[in-house]
Image (cartoon, rainbow, N blue to C red; front, side, top):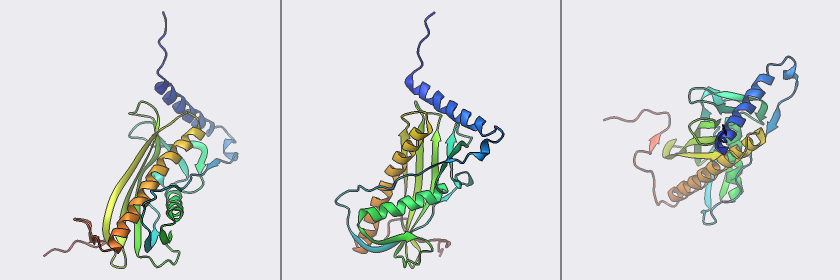
Length: 233
């Protein structure tokens, strides 16, 4: 009887799962932990809409909050919706939230459209603070035709010194993987994060520009103090 070939997308998913399983098993071999992990870096965005306005403000970008499972330098993978695993001997160069923070700051700098941008504790007198939550930053091997990387970042723009949230939005990018090896996986992370970084940077600069020029002050339901209970009559 002639066997029907597996679809390419299914073969890719099975290969990536096998690669993950092999890496996980190798981490259990005595002495394997002596081998240092291979470190991976991601890149900031450097190309933006030419019509992006120039803003005369200073921005502090805080490190994103995240669930405990993402507070690590290990590369996360979900083989099903209810589990979170990690690739063995393959890590980011920093904790995932701090890596995202660094790439955000570098991306803002690459626009050439902002007076100054830095992280908290840098001594920068901020006109605005960008708070965020890293909600997804993992490879996913389920519910899709082929393995994907999913990155979701929710952001809040806070005007200082009143500490008033003037805008908020969530940004998501799902990037199909082009191969089953870890190098292709990291390329998928770079593409997914890059798409999110570009949209966050452009959105933030436009939001600050509209407020600096007095076009808008706060949007309905968004102008509320950070960390304070809403006022009631």
